[in-house]
Image (tube, rainbow, N blue to C red; front, side):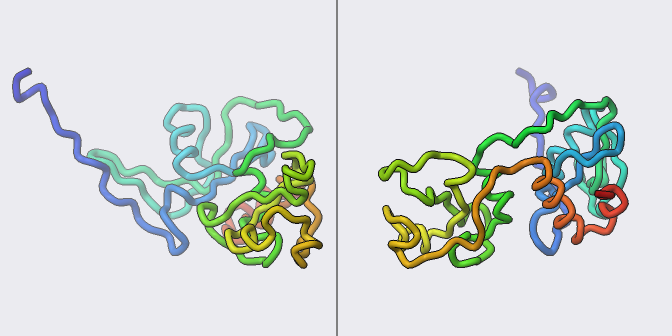
Length: 192
């Protein structure tokens, strides 16, 4: 290859930072085409949806993503351009959804931590017949997980902050409302 065909692509310059972390990880409210709130995603995912033409930005968070020849405003609220039918059922059981349900809070000591600093605990240990279900998995810090070990909470002299439940549509909307308190631009879309 000749030198003109080989171009080095420099990495994107750093993005403006938010006080609580990187701007691309900021939460973005996702609305259906009908303006009904249906999800929360990271700003990075929201930008991809907008660039692909699947969604449009309704509100911006004041930050920019800078590329070599382009500056993109980071969205705070996006709306899908085509209506998506959302079934009224619980969300998929996953580590991410358990941590979201438990608001990144250890369900034994109450400490709020980053996702990377939390584990999932089986309230009834798997070795003692506990299943991997919504009702048996909770967010747990490493210290509490070691303390509880292979015991029931009562045997380890520990107590859950609240009874674990499935993450349903009502739970999702409640979490959206809680997250919306930190972003005034969400409020007009969270009408229930």
